[in-house]
Structures are given as C-alpha cells and as structure tokens.
Length: 272
Ligand SMILES: NC(=O)c1ccc[n+]([C@@H]2O[C@H](COP(=O)([O-])OP(=O)(O)OC[C@H]3O[C@@H](n4cnc5c(N)ncnc54)[C@H](OP(=O)(O)O)[C@@H]3O)[C@@H](O)[C@H]2O)c1
Image (tube, rainbow, N blue to C red; front, side, top):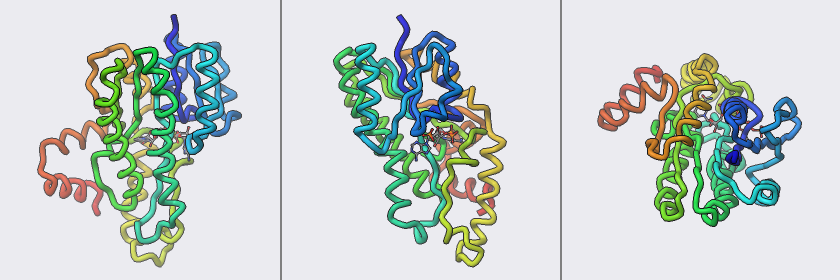
C-alpha cells in the first residue's frame, strides 16, 4: 500500500523536488502551497495539490481533514515551508518579527498539531523538519531567520521524546545553501536596513551579496529529496541530517571548535 505524505511549501525548490521524487517512488503526496495555482504543473497521478496556509490552523485542519477522510492516515509529514527576513534587530518592525516566527516556527508547530493525533492513533509516523545549517550558526542581519531555525532544532529534539512511545520518528535536515527560489522569492528585506544611509550599510554591502550568490550557486534541491527518501526507508537514520556543501563545511567545524573559535572562522569566511 502506498504511504501517504503531507508536505508544505511544495510549489518550488526542495518541496517541489521532494514531491516529484516521492511520487515517482510510489508514495501518494499531498503537496501544499498558499496558492494552489502554483501547483498546477504538479498534476501527476500520485501528487494531489492542496491549498494550505500554515499561518492559519483552520486552513491546515481543512487540508488534513481532506487527507484523513480519504485515507484514514498520514504516514509522513514534511515541514518544509519557510522564508527568511533580512533585517537588523534595530530596524525590524513588529509585523516582520512576528511573521518570521509565525511561518518558520509556529507554522511548523500548527501542522504538527494537526497531524500528530492521527499518527499517534495509527501508532506510526515520520516527521521530517527542514531546518538549515543556519540553525546552528549565528549571522548578522539574519538573526530572526537563524534563530527560527535554532527553534526548529529544539522543537525536533523535544518532540522526539514526546512521541517516542507512539512509534513516531522525528528528524531534522540541515541543508547548506541550495539553488531554489529562496533568494529570488523568499528573502524579505527590511527597507531601513537596506537604506544607503543605514548605520549598517557597510555590513549589508559586504554580507548580503555573498549570501545571495551562495544560495543561487548552491546545491541542487534533488539532493534533499534523495535524503528524505533515505530517512523514510531507514528507521535507524540519524536524527539530524546534513546535506549540501556549506552544511558539510560548517557543521563539523561547529562541533569541533570552541564557540569563540567557530565564531572567528565564520567572521573570516564572510569577511564581517
Ligand atoms: N535555499 C536554501 O539555501 C536553504 C538553505 C537551508 C534551508 N532552507 C529551507 O528550506 C525550506 C525550503 O526552501 P527552498 O530553498 O526550497 O525555497 P523556495 O524555493 O523559496 O521554497 C519555499 C517554500 O516555502 C513556502 N513559503 C515561503 N514563504 C512562506 C510563507 N510566508 N508562508 C507559508 N509558506 C511560505 C513557499 O510556498 P508557497 O509560496 O507556495 O506557499 C515555497 O514553496 C525553507 O524552510 C528554507 O528555510 C533553504
């Protein structure tokens, strides 16, 4: 029997690549987006596009009900939707601050909330959270984004304890930089931070072109799709998986070095 997958943020990048790859591997994939028209090119037998706004519990529940009414189960949840705010703390406004966590952290929790009960009753399930290598590294201008991914790491580790008696596995994937729509469509910039007269203009002009260049020349999203299938197929897979060049460069260093030495290496590397 085909396993049932629910994935968020499936309209582009890692979500799109994963939806197609899992569908080709005999999974039934419920691929979600805020805008269902963006999923029209996904009309394959094993992929069912669904509208879902992860900032609304009602919208999530509606989508999960559709899946549950048809299959009476959800086998795999992939929390992938996310975006990045690029702003200093001084400049960010209340909405920018709240929205970053509303999507990357509370959005993920809302989708977990809607599906965990189903997995618990079926006594099986896999939750895979797409975090980031930046969930283990501090960077200026990305404080909100990076800390939201630190939160994803903490949620993943805590949920694993909470769900262990119900045969539900919880993993995170920490990708390095990947060439998706992320830098083009899903980096939100604060206007004051990017003003040429900003006190942070020097930092902005040094760091942001490097980050954008590294994302746009990053790894191929298909690598994430391959890793997700490996996690699904191997119940002994490590709880935290790294994928992509930048993650492989920085995360072992993070473990080996002291906080101070690691920070120095990050500053040297990004010239900040
Ligand atoms: N690209 C990278 O270098 C990189 C590195 C590490 C981690 N990541 C993480 O990987 C995940 C996938 O990103 P990607 O690289 O594949 O980027 P992408 O191609 O830009 O896709 C991002 C997806 O997230 C959804 N999304 C964006 N903003 C949203 C919002 N405000 N509310 C709800 N959904 C939203 C979008 O869905 P809709 O617009 O269709 O709703 C879109 O499908 C994200 O969590 C990202 O943080 C990316």
